[in-house]
Image 1 (cartoon, rainbow, N blue to C red):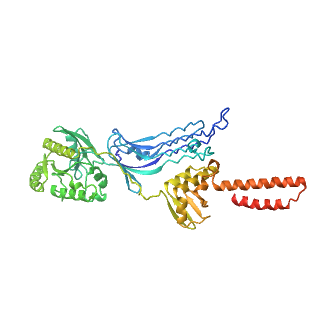
Image 2 (image 1 turned 90 degrees about the horizontal axis):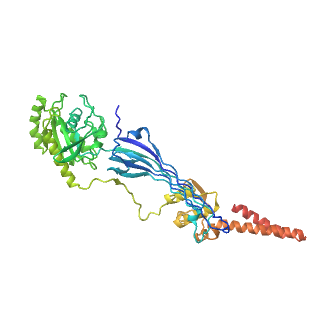
Image 3 (image 1 turned 60 degrees about the horizontal axis):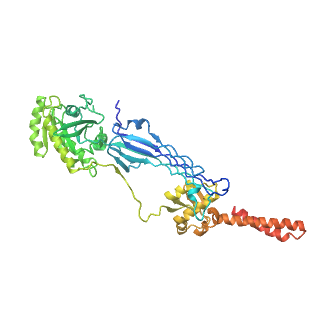
Amino acid sequence: MATFVDRAVLHVAAGDGGNGCASVRREKFKPLGGPDGADGGDGGDVVLVVRAHVASLLDYHYHPHQKATSGKQGSGSLRTGAKGQDVEVPVPNGTVVYDTDGNQLADLVGEGATFVVAKGGKGGLGNASLASAKRKAPGFALLGEPGEKKDVVLELKTVADVALVGFPSAGKSSLIAALSAARPKIADYPFTTLVPNLGVVESAGTTFTVADVPGLIPGAHQGKGLGLEFLRHVERCAVLVHVLDCATLEPGRDPITDLDVLEQELSLYKDDVARLTERPRLVVLNKVDVPEGRELAELVRPELEARGLQVFEVSAVSREGLPALTYALAGVVQADREARPLEQATRIVLRPKAVDDLGFTVEPDGDGFVVRGSKPERWITQTDFANEEAIGFLADRLAKLGVEKALAAAGATPGAEVTIGDVSFDWQPTELEQFSSGMRGQDARLEDRSRIGAEERRLQKDLRRAERMGLDREALQAELEKVAPRRDADE
């Protein structure tokens, strides 16, 4: 059973941010010491890190779930909540990260390369952080944001200088065993090599790596045989070596035909991206230790050289021709390194927003409207809807962002149902100045409710006084009956 896995689906979940704290400083002789509620701690991240000791993605085939811890809640006396613990996910060199739609997110190359695959949620602000000149003592705090949860696909593309390509049983495994200290499994049946094997070779003062990858057959670019499992691992190689079997007994097989098939498959595989046919290529006529193989190699060599290919007659068994081959490979690899002196760096794919992007959209949805955007949806998750001041603060933020103007422009009328995230409410437009008036960030709706309550209490007091003094109470009772429906309607 093979213990090499070069593709895995990872289910990652970052930690949630801790809630902020709403607290007021209370000390002797300082009864109104001001807000001292601290922020919550940020949630932990899930981070992919390239480690040299990791050779495959096997661990994540059996353990695909990776989760970071959440941040702690803030406390009074300005004590910030603890940050959640990050989770480090070690991956092999050459790991490419995709989302579930196939979009590339990162290409990790080099020891220590990192990529934050899931960002932890930000901790909620405490009321000390929310205090301002107009809101000196907020009676609320923000909730922590939830951490990112997503599925990503990890694919390993072998990082090697030289790739040995050829039909099954062409002698690639034997050749890499003769060139390096690698000891791959060798047998005389097709697809003996099920996983890429890497070997390190030193020649002419140059050290380079050679990859022996699974055999290639017609239709490999469409996934036949080991197909794409093979071709993925040759994308990064600087030079391709066609290993041609000169001693095969299969009917219809000869070195020229095999080479044409290999070239065809390379040209059809991601030609607009990988462009494998543009790489330097060498031809190895293998198994010349067999008399029939040597005769066939001498027969086809002139035709191959006529195509402009550098040809080497070798034998992995007798080691004939190997010094010349390694010397030539060292020269090609060194030339490629000089052409690209900078090491291929980790590539993180960034997708910036358009300059006219408001950060949200307003779309009709039946009789109502749906507001979509990272900021409004994040603010919804941060709001404690059991606290009236927090609701007023949310309305203030949405108005400043321009959500109210966008709703009006989209045709929304007062009382229309508006949905943001998983919260729906009846829209009551309010001018921006009304949101910031009054104490502690209360909005106009709360102020109206306070005025109605004060008026009702005054009328009830006058009614009790008139009853004690024996005065006419009908006029006061009529006014009180008018106030009660206004209070109920506002609630």
